[in-house]
Length: 588
Ligand code: FES
Ligand code: MG
Image (cartoon, rainbow, N blue to C red; front, side, top):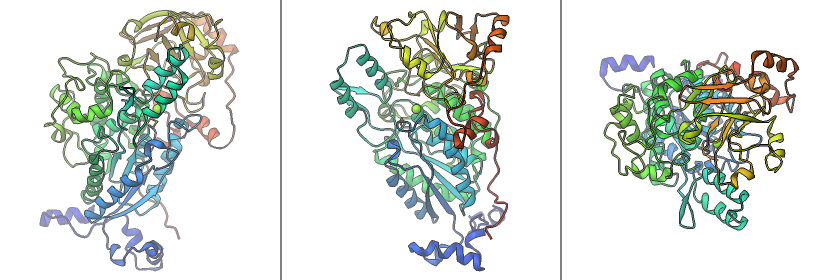
C-alpha cells in the first residue's frame, strides 16, 4: 500500500498506519462508519479493534454435506488464533461447499457457481486479505478461481488427507480401492459383507481422500504454486502439524497484507509451469489440467493444454502412490512430503526457482533443504517410479481441440493400439448395456462414451473410467482403452482418454463415432485418429442433432449456455478474467 511504502523507505520499519481497503468501511466517522461498526459490535468486538488493523477473511467450506471438510471449524479456529496473534482482525465466512460424494449430478457442475460466491463475497466486504480453506476436490479450484478474480493478498490452507484406510491387515485407498473392490464384487471375488466392512475401514478419520486423487493433487498444486505454506500437501488432517500450518497461515496473511503481497504476485506464469511439472512428478490427477487452466485465466496468465504436454513431458513420476502406485498420503507425509519433490525438480533444472511464494521467499528457498526419509515412497530422479509420465495431450480428427491421457495410470502396451469402437450414446445407454452378455465386445475393442462433457452431462461428470463388461473382467482382464468427453476421478486408473474437445453435445467429431469404426491411439505420437473418411463423417454430421439439455431454466441453463470446453478450463465465458477488489459504488 502507498502509505506503507513511503514509511518503509524512511524508517526501514513496517508502517503502523496502512492504507487498507477495510478503512473505507471501518475508519469512517459519519453515519456509515457507525453502521459498519455498530452491528459488528453485537458479539463483543471492542471499539479499539477498529483501529485500522488488517481485516482478514477466513473463507470456510465447512459443511456436513462435505465429509472431507467436516473438521474445518477447528481449522478455522486455528487460523483465527494466528490472525489475532499477528495483530489482525479475523472474520470467518461460509461459502458454497462442494463434496464429491453426495452432490448430483456432479460437483463439477457447481464449481463455477461456488467460485462466483467466493469472488463476490470477498469483493463486497471489508476484507484486506483472505485465508482460503481447501479440502474436497472442487473446494480448492472454486475458492482459488474466485479469489483470483479479486486479487487481494491470499493464502490457502488445505484440510489434509485422511489417515490410511486399513482393511484386514492391508492399506486401502479412497476411490482407488472402491473401484477395484466393486469390480471384485461384480466378478464374484468379494462378498457383499466384506464390501460393507471395507466401507467402514476405508474412511476412518477426518480429511479428504488419501490417495493422490484430485484433492491431494490440488493440495500439492497450491503448494507448488506457492499459494500455501510448505508442507501443505501431505500432513494428515488429524496431525497436529496441520493445525500449526493453519495457525501460521493466519499469522502470515496479516504480514502479507502489510507487504501488499497480492495473489497475482504469486500466481505467475512461472508458478503454473512449476505446478505442471509437479503434477507430473507426483502422478497427479487429470482434473488439475482443467482447474489450473481456469485459475490461470482468472488471474490473467496465459495457459493452455499444450503447456501441460510441453512442461510435463520430460518429468518422471517420483511418487509410488495410489492410484498409480501402492502407498498413500500418510506415507508421503512421513517420507518428507512435497518439499522433497520440489527440491528434486529444482536440482534437475525443472523448477522456476525464483517464483515468489506466500512466505515472501522463493519456492527454491522454501524447499532446497528438504530431506527424504523413505525412498520407496518418494523415489530418486535417477531411479524413478515411472519414467516420462507427464499428462499427454492428444490431437487428431477425433479431438481437434485436444484430449488427455495420464500414462502413469495406464497399461503400457495399450498406449499404442488400434481397435474397434463400441459406442455408448450417453451414460444411461452405458448402464443399460454394459452388463449384458449380448454386448458385442472383446478386450481389443475401444469403449467410446458420448455426451458426458461440460454441456452434455451437464457438468462433465467423472464417468470416463467406465467399468469394464463382466465377461471381460471374468477373464481376469482389468484394463481396456476408453475414450470420452468426460473426466475421471483422480482416484481412478486405466488407459483412459478424457476431456475430448469439442465434446459430443457441442457437435464435436466424437458425436459422429459409430459402432464398428476403427480408432487408433498412439500416445508416443500424441495421436488419436478415427479411421473414417471425411465424406462419411460429413454425411453423419448432416443427420446429427444436439441432445436436449435436461433442464432449460435456472443454473443448468446458465451453465449450458455459457460453459467453455475442457481445453479452456470449463469456466463460464463471462467469468474469465479479474475485476480487482474495487467496488464501483458505496451501499448508500
Ligand atoms: Fe472429498 Fe475425495 S471425496 S476428496
Ligand atoms: Mg473426484
